[in-house]
Image (cartoon, rainbow, N blue to C red; front, side):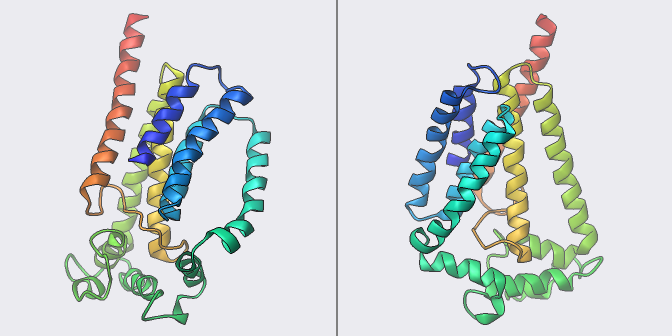
Length: 256
């Protein structure tokens, strides 16, 4: 819910100011972003806290921040990474990153998920093994196959052709949302719709990345595909906001 509420709160706050927002407005918006981020990180849930921060930062980015500020932020984040690694991250979080580099060091423990997922994706081939005929998924070698690792199941059973169709549908959905954002009549509509679409892109990218072994496992579901009621409700609420922005654009155009 925080990944949805934070961009809504930031967009509501900055839309009253000119774009790009002034430095003091940007500073207050950063406080609004990182207060819930730190609370989520303290649970501890580092993966979700990063996504919460990104959801708010996307809205700030779309509001027209200067590239100089963005560059300074990147440098500060890079300088903070060693502190995060040595002093703030828990042992199991560091272990997840190390498993990303070499999961074979613990094939029956922390690296089991990634290894089985790679086997499932690689064995699918071009056209897959057929619906409900995947060995890794149906024989239960692949953990969490109905939630976070559903992409590996689709890759094994539908093959490269199936996942390319899925990716094409995601791209079509995201591009349509960005088209609506670009044509919104208000600053709030532009940054909110654009931010929600970028959040959707990050969810897809992170899920596919962690299942493919190029990102650490952080427990992010695949939007509109993974099993889960709360994630689907929040996602549908986001789509509802985007459609409302599009509808109000038409109403404003007619009134003008």
